[in-house]
Amino acid sequence: MAKKITDYLLYRWRYIIGYSIIGVSIVGLLLLAGLYVPGGINQEEMNSVVASHNLSLQSLEAFDPKSVINLPYNLLQRASTEILGITNFSIKLPSLILGAFSALGMILLLQMWFRRNVAVLTTVLVIATGQFMFVAQNGMPSIVYIFWSVWLLLAAMMVSRRAPFLRLWKIILFGAAALSLYTPLSVYILIALASAIIFHPHLRYLFRQLLKARANVAIATVCALIAITPLAYAIYKDPSVGLTLLGVPQAMPDIMANLMTLLNQYFSFSNPSVGALMTPIYSLGAMVLIVLGIIRLATTNYTARSYIISAWAILLLPVLLVAPKFSTITFVPAMLLMAMGISSLLRSWYQLFPRNPYARIIGLVPLTILIGGMFFSGVSRYTYTYLYNPATAQYFSHDLTLIDTQLRATDRGATILAVAENEKLFYNIATEKHSNITVTDTQPDLQADTTIVSRAARAAGTYAAPKYVVTDSRNELADRFYIYKNDQK
Image 1: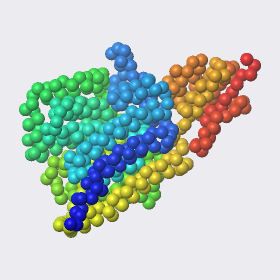
Image 2: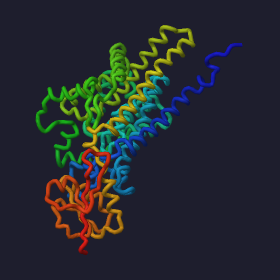
Image 3: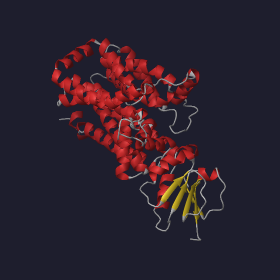
């Protein structure tokens, strides 16, 4: 008797293999991005460390209202750097953890909204995009836009489907909604979900069912209110904090310039640019899938997910015109549109061969090659751009590793570290666990046993020839620190 397709081991284990590939890919990509690519930290990451260490909860009088912006992320980063010290890895660790949980949430969410084959293919594709790998290793709060979006949608779906541990999922939903308010623009995610509930009849029914469990809703609401108490107090003390979280600019932005920035971020395929974040954000193949997803969205505008994605897009597009730097907030809608595009491709092929299982399986081969090619090209583009493109060197610094090596020297004695004014706050924090060292942003007299002068500080002063120079082969501006020794002591 001839074997059926379903008898083959590869077919029966296809999802286990797929999930294993996703798991290995997530771990491998996060380790690659977190430890090696780009390997250094940029000025915004340094500013994030300063913000994390400036948190003061000692008294209400010392409380800085602006410190609540991105408070959940800053608390994680403060904990990481307090436990592990100030290193490149400890600075990036919160983003790596949130990136891993975001990827887990993606696969769970996509499985609930699409078929498992679509979920596997989409997850493999989106975790290899340059934007995800960059924000997942960047030691600043960009990753939380993806994290909150994914887990808000996932928790809402779990509650609507009455999943196991329903009370826990309600607490997660309300808690995530409350904590997301600390992140600029995240309120628009909640408004999009609320708008979909108002306009879609099935979502209205599910919301009414949710409210019937009054005890669970009350517990979840109390947890959410406790979580937003610091935020409410901060807005009471300084209303401008609320405007910042809403994305309201302090001055009228140049809409046309912002529009051109957005077009370059998403469509500059013939003239890609390299900065801290690569552009275009998505590859040409990914954009084609997104366009197919938009077409699919327009033809199935009666579904709950269509309402949610449409409301999300309508709310975010004007916001992005005002503040195009927040492009990461569009990642999850783009992911869902990619999944809809892949689903459309599979559906079209299956409609051609509704009864032939061999043709249906063979149809997956070119699609798998397409997704695999996009995966490896995305990883290669990210790796080679951040490792070998000289234009990126100006954005990332390995100075923290270099200065740590110098400060660990046993013969350095009393040390003065001279840095530029914009570097002083960061190096004060980075060197606080080293003894016998003073950080200054003025030109020292070179009377200490060891004087270390950063490149920026030396350019602003007048110094004699150093004992030796600490260089970085990965930076075009290779001279990073100048070492002076006082041999008269």
